[in-house]
Length: 202
Image (cartoon, rainbow, N blue to C red; front, side, top):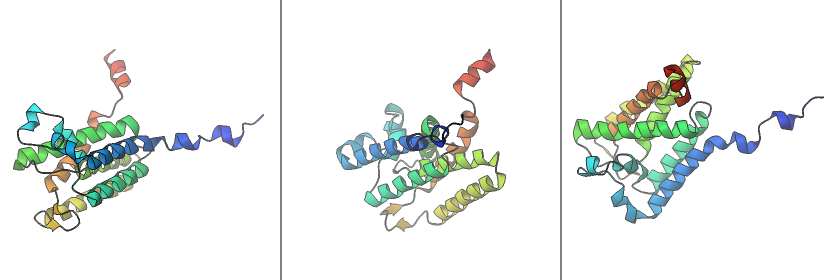
């Protein structure tokens, strides 16, 4: 007796589970945007890096305007769909946290720059992470993804001192570079699950 196709194929809700984490992040960013009174507690400040370390991560949840927020929300969903077989759920969150850390520390350490907000730097890290993972099985595709990121960063550098019209501010070039570095560093850092580490120790 053969099983029906309905039992062999995963349900639609199961196939869309990879969107849960992105939609949770989007909901948080929308909440922050609609409640501007909490932004002063989230954005990075020179005195808050050590005394209020949560700002290292939460500054990336704040956006300058609705266009800035919309672009990053769309980009997050697009990235989640493109890399759904490689980066999703808890792994996506972990990659974003590592990318956020690097996206904050690089501009702070290299340029003493604390005036940046938005998720774009973190998203650069997720794309780099996904590209490096894909290189293991589809090298041409992975290389192409990484080359696109490099070209994007070069363009950012060329426009680093130019105010973006729709953004109303200069592009946070070092933040993007930091996020990309964070995504690359996350590959060896997250290559094994905790259970695999435990087994190795024993």
